[in-house]
Length: 310
Image (cartoon, rainbow, N blue to C red):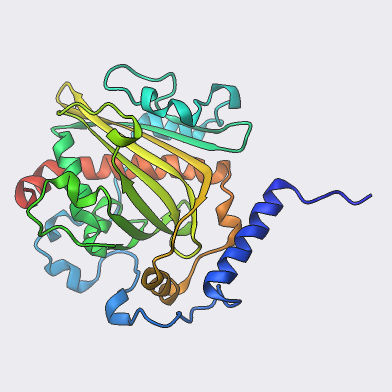
């Protein structure tokens, strides 16, 4: 008797159908759907271009990303967490409470139901929560800004709505907005969209001297949500600490942004239905990536904010 398809096979099969429905049978082709001209889309590229060196923030451009904190490097070199030690997604608002710490501050693992978990703790001297609220409203308007965060892995960024010139609080520039990015997580190129949500509306306690950046993560090309991210920033001695959490394989559907789909394919689509089922390898790479980018940016964020922030 032939065995039925596994859950993974069913998800991949369904994802392939979704991709084909959005893009047609040539989803892996570099040909773009109609719309999304080169001028409208921009391109993805590694490192900085000569034109980037003329940006007013060029002095913050580094050739390489700073290493992750030692605790992240140690966790990367070690084994995954045991499934029964991984916190459930339902506990995220208490896990990232205004005070106290979780039993897992840095690590990666997978629950028995397949949900992937990543935690990263980053200490950031001289940094404040307000600086991060400003950064999330400012950095995605062009690729060169996004590259400041992780010059090795970040290739492209765009916003659904550029609110940087609006006379509104920094939080309002990214909450309710969506960013579209191409980046490497480990060796794998990802084309992602992150829709930023109001953390208070989702049950987080956010005192005035703290912030929580909450996002729904999905594929740009396939209308499939992949999971959630949350970065809590709160004061500590000498600056701030960031407590990051990722929960992946918590899937849903979203209405695709057809212009961004066209642009993503024009850049050279990386979408693969198998990418929509995330395993421990990507979780481990994501933990290192997060540790690197948060530590790297924290090193000059106070100066960047003083020069360009509100």
